[in-house]
Length: 225
Ligand code: CA
Image (cartoon, rainbow, N blue to C red; front, side, top):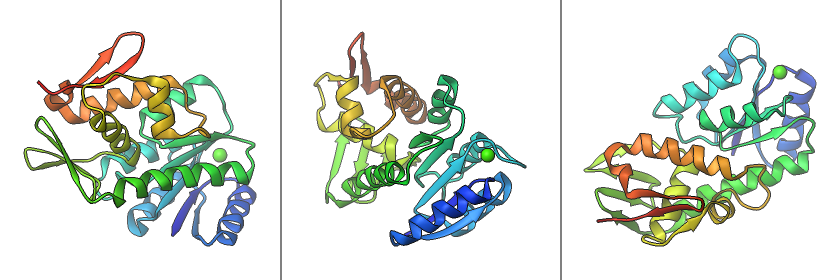
């Protein structure tokens, strides 16, 4: 497993690399956003740890770029930020980060997040079946969603969210339940995170996203006519 750490505080980057390597990871450090983006695009790691305030290109822009490119769009991204303001949370998730941590954080906390994300990835990959809902087909082996044979690029988190809704088609699902199912108990994420991901999911799915219904004051429901 390979992680790319994009962080301009060299001491922190090296500490993270050291600890990850102790846990069996290969690591690459990038000290600015631009070289970080290049490193991810060429190395295609299993995980990106991304600082927000970076020279050359900030973390938001790096994350947007990763999500735009087909080959990097599904790579899990954990944002680490010194600023804990609400705006950063929302922005972080709106650009498609899978989770975030506010500095200072313990390495143990980071490992919990990493493991939760990897569980999402593997639980998505290990089931040998497909779900068909309306014009949507979720290939649970390949972790790919298609609409009329056209592949839609979703992040790991977006896929898991869609899968959770699809597996309980016709049943209302509360935001808290979706949060637990998709992000797990250890996440910083709150219920608005569910909303921002649903918004992204709907926009990626286009007309096919209309099967995701909002249940006012409660959550969401996937319903096929
Ligand atoms: Ca920084």
